Amino acid sequence: MPNPKHRFSKTRTAKRRTHYKIDAPTFVACSNCGTSVLYHRVCPECGFYRGRLAIEKNATA
Picture 1 (cartoon, rainbow, N blue to C red):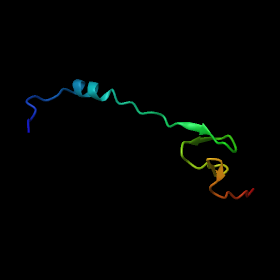
Picture 2 (spheres, rainbow, N blue to C red; picture 1 turned 120 degrees about the vertical axis):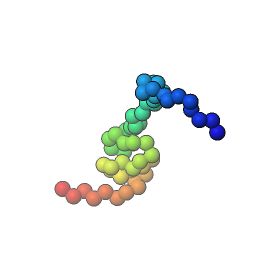
Picture 3 (cartoon, one colour; picture 1 turned 90 degrees about the vertical axis):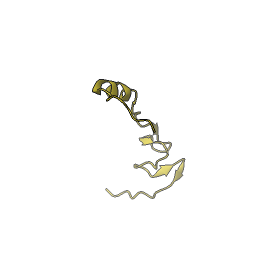
């Protein structure tokens, strides 16, 4: 197993790490109420997922 002969500089290490970019999560509109929801998640407002009721929400006011 080869070992490095020289130490990498901080600049060279930082240049290698600059290519990583984090992506923002993708939001879609809920098909039932229209609020923004993450993909593949149940809507926190109405409880619908893919057009069907997944979680029964109580309307307490």
